[in-house]
Image (cartoon, rainbow, N blue to C red):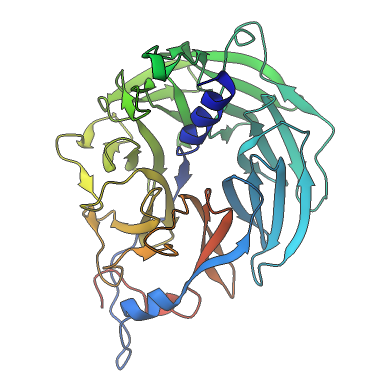
Amino acid sequence: MNRGIVSLLCVFLFALTSCGGGGVVRKPEPLPPGTNPVTNAELTSAVSKNAFTTGAAPSRIAVRSGNVYTLNSLANTMTVNSASDYSLAATVSFPVGAGPYSLVSSGEWFYICTNGDNKIYRFRMGQDELDAANVSLIRQETESLAFIGPGDMAVFGGKLYVPLSGIQSFGDASQGIPAVYAPGRVAVINLDPFQFEKFIELPAVNPTVCSIGAPGQLFIVCTGELQFDTSFTPKAESDGEVVFYNISTDSIVHRSNLGRTLPSAFISPNSVDAYIGSNLMGEVYKIRLDNGTILRGPSDPISLSSDFTYVSGFVGLPGLGIIALSFNTDEAYFIDPMDDAVSRSPFSKPFSFKESDTFFGGLQYGAFYESASSKKLFVILGIANQAGVVDFTALWDRIRLGEG
């Protein structure tokens, strides 16, 4: 297998990582007298499997100010659709081969990293093209890498934190030659002025996700070495970790080891704990945010399904709980953070985005949108090049944990 094909394969599997944040989970409230609980049939009817078509190989999606922003890695575009009627409002172009992968917003700006030309671009919401300024991640420490691999970023205190996968060589799985990884790094970008500042050196391999928690703590999900056997079946050759980094003191304060599970997706629904998804075991783990204690680890995981699955992302439903996305089953599962129960009523069945038993859409990433008149869950299917929606608007006031 040549390097170009292996590169695409690595980018494809790397696209299974994600991060996110959720709302505060409230206690169950009784329904008003005479009000019927939401049923599975009503929730199923709220699903639109193909609300709109994206560009080629969508990787990330975000919703801001009534618009849905979708990065399309192979199309080298960001499409902008209306969150209300899903009509296409604009298409923002990147340079050919840029490969836009992940985005994070701060104020009126989106910051977007690319896996093709390895840059950080910025986009001002309301415009129809990228800002002229960009920051290259190709520096002395990264210029020799076969794949720099910027991943899911975080913004805090006027700085952008970019995890770098850092593959020195892809190897050749067909010949049993493994990929070689560089030490883990996070690039720090100063947003004013818009320029590279430094690297944070990590003790773990293959950082793919950064997320911010109060007070100024950076959570870095290090997936560990992703390798492939000669049949191109993925496997973990080193332990995955969550590294807790104090931004004020520039020091590592905790490390949570999750073993050879290829941890990836991350979400903190409150200030107490966080959930991490496995891209190898199809499980969800839970850690404390104050001291890194593993509450639910590989020996006692949160299981979503008896079917084999990759956990490709999380989305917070404000005041309700967490939605965990399955890449290869095209289903979205509800987790109750109050006791880690999965598929609790009224979400006793997962949301399905399957077109058929033979159709593989690749449910990859999601975003929740809330306005005065609308509450929707948007998801992208990276193989099918489409976006799906669960429209909770008419049901939201009747949805209560433990009811149904």
